[in-house]
Image 1 (spheres, rainbow, N blue to C red):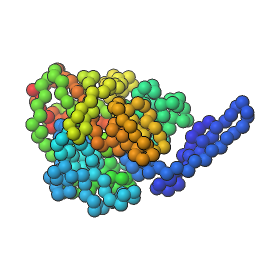
Image 2 (tube, helix red, strand yellow; image 1 turned 45 degrees about the horizontal axis):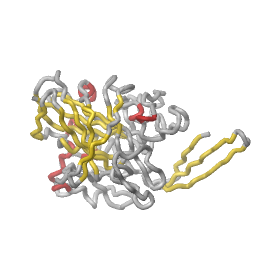
Image 3 (cartoon, rainbow, N blue to C red; image 1 turned 60 degrees about the vertical axis):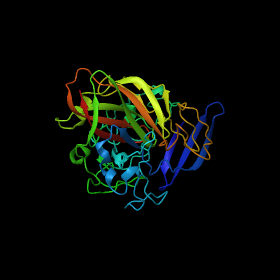
Image 4 (cartoon, one colour; image 1 turned 180 degrees about the vertical axis):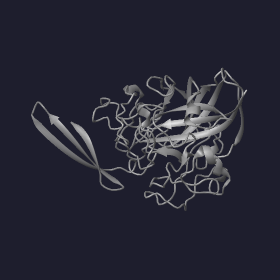
Length: 374
């Protein structure tokens, strides 16, 4: 048996479930026509909130100043809302001044490929470069979609996506590419060209240094906060690159920041809840480096959460597909990770890199922030 997907248009998919009943020697063909607003044209989006990222460079422009979430008259409105979504997020009780941070990413990136293609990749169910690389993250405990199917089977439709071999999929730029690719692709969120950056710009090349005033001491534990605008599972890592070095993926991979094993959720009223993080260090790149699984399970009106939400919530999924800590658009809660500043690195100016490898899509979100190490 297997599940097959055929694209009909922007808003619909047909799924054909073929079930072979060997006992009765019957074939049952069930066709379900489902509206898939969360699969076609919606991309997963995330924002590094603290330390403040260079990617928030537009935060002082009128459309985003004082924590506003976007321009309702942008060039490429969403087909669903006929307006432009913003990078909605919460920053405890203060403004969440991320501007267009959630629009710096890489699209069309399969594991094992030499480069991303920049084309529509949500959802992605294929090896985009036909390289044949096998996924390394196959334990259901660390997967955020289709946990009940056998890894690398035909039903394991997301096996070619970044989270299935954390860190191994290529990116356009370690600080993200404006709009996710060289050319605009229809998504729910579209990058708005400004005086600071335009579609296709590379973050490491165009985003200026943006001192945050944050100083981390070697060997201590520190916090970093990020938020999900649209959820597509996967997992993430924080890394460091010396400011004086060229900002490349290789530079960031040379110094991943260890997780201290403490993760918290933070809501807009300042409330925090400590949760149990899930960490993966097998089959990752850099080799044996630790990645954290996205703790917020995806769900929709037709799909229950893939795993237990990490907070107490009561949600009627037919009325609201997003809860306090789960769902399609869990941007009303932020994820706070406690990290360990490596003891062995030299003091000085560094760039903190954040990388989120998605599982349902061939997409990777990245942000860069300026910090000092003492």
